[in-house]
Image (cartoon, rainbow, N blue to C red; front, side):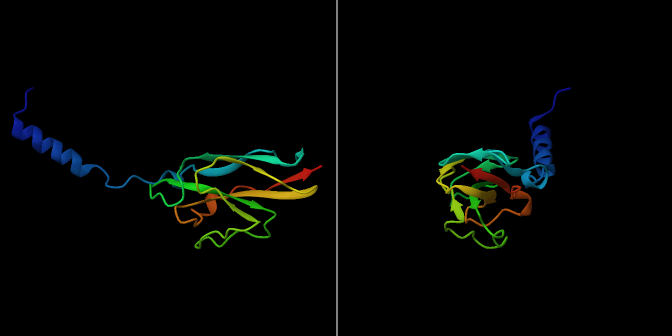
Length: 141
């Protein structure tokens, strides 16, 4: 069956109009953030290499406004999570990786330490509670 040009244009326009305007963000289904290394309970030497894991979203530098992306923040011995609707502070307990880094090396004193990741948006605001990793505990010898 052959279509004339006018019919083909109308079918194409109808198809475009029926497509969703916005795709659902990936983070609503299976996105998550986690620490690949070191593992929970590990005994390590300082400096400690921490490798960040991410699924269902992409990494982009701070300030880049691209849907479905953000960047990592490492909490080191933080007493609590940051406020979920405000920018994550930048201090010794809240380390920013706004250039899009996916790992870091951290100098830690001998003893027990907790590490946790929070994935933030272009403005360092946490993407949501589903983008907070489980906290891990490591011992530096």
